[in-house]
Length: 457
Image (tube, rainbow, N blue to C red):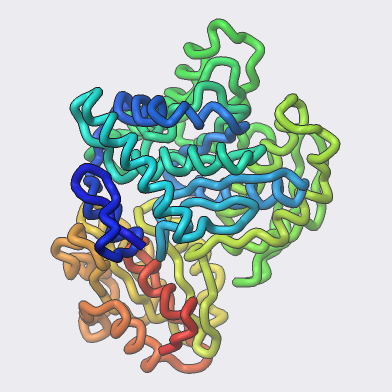
C-alpha cells in the first residue's frame, strides 16, 4: 500500500497502511458545514445521488438499526451498501456491500482518486476536507460504482452539518433516540441536540423516530412539519405510538420478541442481538420495512415477512454485548455515554445473578460524562479495573474511578495498558464469573482485535 503526500497525491515510494495514509494527509478534526463535502462530491460527479438511501441519525441505537435493516434488505435479495462509523478495529468496517467489507486495495485506490478531488476542492473553497469528509466521499463513490440498490447510511455526528447529509432525497429517514452526547458540538440541551439530528429531515421523505424525551421529540416534530409544508402527506411515525412488544431473553445468545405494529403481529421473532434496548431498534426496523413496502424504491414483493425474520435472526453487530470468550465469560460492549451505560446497566441488573462475580474493565475519553456513566454501573459489579483508551482524548483517565462510590477502594485498581487490564481481570475471574469490558470504542475495538486474531489471553 502507498501513502498520500500533503496534497493528497500518492507517493509510491513509501508503503503504508490505509490508516497511516489517510491520517497523515487529512485532519481528524470536526468542521461543521456541508460546503466542503458538497464541492468534493461535485468534483467526483455527485455519486451520492445514485443509490436509494435510508439515512439514520440518533444518539444511541443508530448503528444497531443500520445493521438490522441492512441484513434484512440483504435477505430480501437487495444489493446493499452499509456505511457506518466509527470503526472498531479497521477503517474497512465502515464500508460494506452485501455484508462484505471493502478490500484494502480498493480503499487505497479510492483514497488516491478522492485525494486528487480533495486537492481541487481545497483550491475551490480554500478548505481542506477532513478525514470523515474524505471517507464519506469514498463511500459514496464506491457504492455508486458497485451499483448498490439500497444504501443504509449512518450519520457520523449530529445530522444537519454531518458529511452524510448531502443526499438530496432519501427514501426514508430515521432518528433513533436523543440523549446527551457531543455537547461541545451539538449543544448542551436535549432540544439543541435534537435540532441538529433533525437536520436530516427532507421534504417528501418519511420519518420514523424512537425519540422519547418530550423536549427533543417536539423539536423533531416541529422541524418535520416545517420541512414538509410543501409535502403535506409525507408520513411521520413515532415508534412508541405504533408498536407494542414483549421479549424473552436468551441471555447473550439473543432474544425472542413478539411485536405488534399497525400492519401485523410478528410472533416469536428471534433477534440475534441481546439487550432489552434492542427491542426498540427492532421495532423501528419493522416499521421501516412496512413503510418501504409502500414506496416505489424496491419491488414490494421482495420485502417479505420471511426475509425480515431471517435478517433479525442472522444480524451481528460487534461490541454490542458481544461474547468473545467463555469460562470465564468475556463480553465487549461499546457503551460510551450515560444513556448507553443506563441501558447496559438494565441488562446487567437482569443477568448479574447468572454469574458469581462481575469484574468490570472500563475506560472512557475525557469529553464524555465519565462520572455519570460510571455511576450507572456502581453497585452492579464486584471489582473495577480502570484502563486507558488508546487515544489522546483519554485525558485524566483515572478520574473515572470517582464514579464508583459504593465499591471499596481495595476493589478498584488502575492498569494503563488495556490488554494487561483484561488479562488481569481474566486471571482474577472464576469459571462462572463475567468480565465485562465497556466504555470507549477506542477501548473495546482495540480489545476485540485480540479475539479476532485468536490471540486469547
